[in-house]
Image (tube, rainbow, N blue to C red; front, side, top):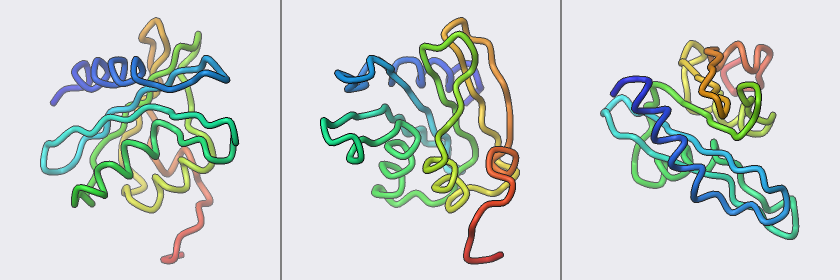
Length: 129
């Protein structure tokens, strides 16, 4: 699966976001080593601490279906500049991705920034450190 396909899947996933409070839809596409793609969107709650980001939705969906080996993540937001994952999502990514796994951040005009998980959270907390 190519990056264009993953970006399209992330954009489509953003259409399912439940964002009545922020009006800030985010969509994510996660590629696994088996070639499967899992999508996710942000899901808000009136009790804001119970809100779930698109990145964690996609990762947890894949894990709940037995996937553990992830290759790449694409994060799309209706933003002028490419969107960046929050700190909680970055820490979850460190738990399940290699630090050199690619993360593509995408804006509404489809401009991108490509980073690695390690670049997103350079001094991450892991049980291996």
